[in-house]
Length: 221
Image 1 (cartoon, helix red, strand yellow):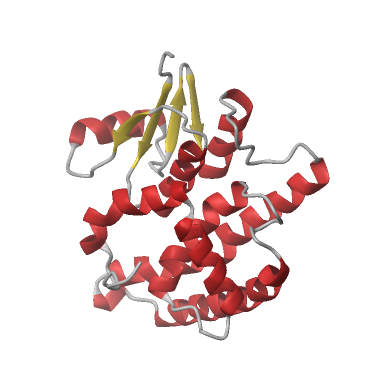
Image 2 (cartoon, rainbow, N blue to C red; image 1 turned 120 degrees about the vertical axis):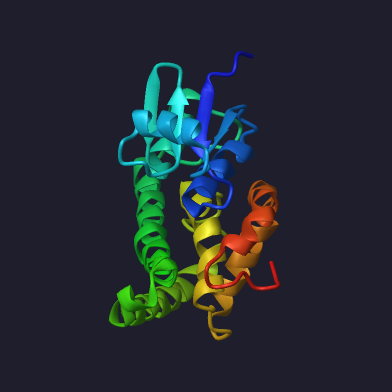
């Protein structure tokens, strides 16, 4: 099989892990183009593909695809495997896409707000913004706990696109703003995600980079 896929990504990035989970679920072969800010050559190559310079980016022959969710949908259309991550039924697919947006907007976005704030100089930090982000995470955890009471995976009984994002986003969110023990369904779901071989592989590949986590990576997971 001729390898046509190149993934510009970093193993420690949550959005990159989202795509890696999809690739690993189906054993899809690809070439790593591992991004590093101290590697001028790879960063110049990356910027030429996507001037916004947000990872991940997938190159498939003469096509360049940006944004993790779109990349996963592209893989399903053009490189399908045994695991279908977006249901054929349009109504069920809509539920998957909604849960995907939930994890992007209400778990990942506030979590990253807290992390990026920690990377700023003390004089440039946004205490109010961080407080709002923590409140949003608590609200999102509470909603998710009720939603997952009778679900195995994010949108129902089958592992999907939404779980590809939920895995890294809940992983880092719990490091950043601990999931309260009262949210037992969220904690159990996070553990199922960690046990999924595709995500377990992504977590293991990222272990060497844990010292980069600005809030201090906890001695767990």
